[in-house]
Length: 158
Image (cartoon, rainbow, N blue to C red; front, side):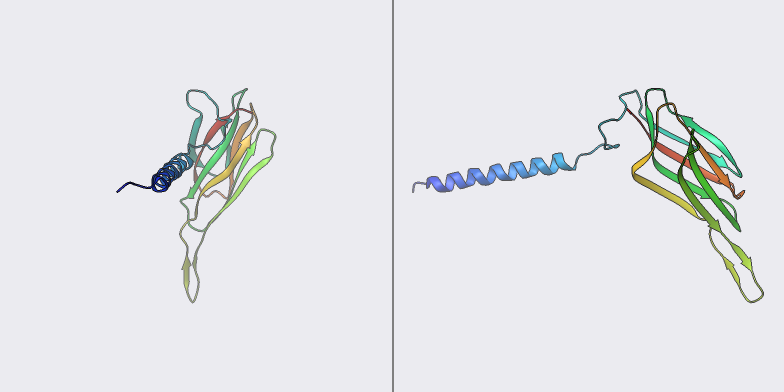
């Protein structure tokens, strides 16, 4: 029995389409962070800083002269009960880049007691918080709530 050329062609076409589909799935799902093409080509374009702040401000970092900073992730936690905190990230021009609120309460009333766990914030920005070249990033806290922070991101070409 001789195979029909139409069967051979359809088998070849099916194999080619499965190969192309598999290739597109494998290549389409691969990604590296950050997603932009303007990431610095330095030895390590990523940064991560952390600390604790209470009722004051602190200079976190300053961008190099030829690069901008993009903060992609923010983690804020507080270790106080009955406290309300405001946390701001500002640049060297004094512009507020982000503002966060943290809250915890502990109320012992006549008829009932109410308590909440100290709040925390874990946020990843899709586009990030950007500062220009040679700009500094400052974190400020009001409320005296002893806020621990971690900021991470990457350096990019302006």
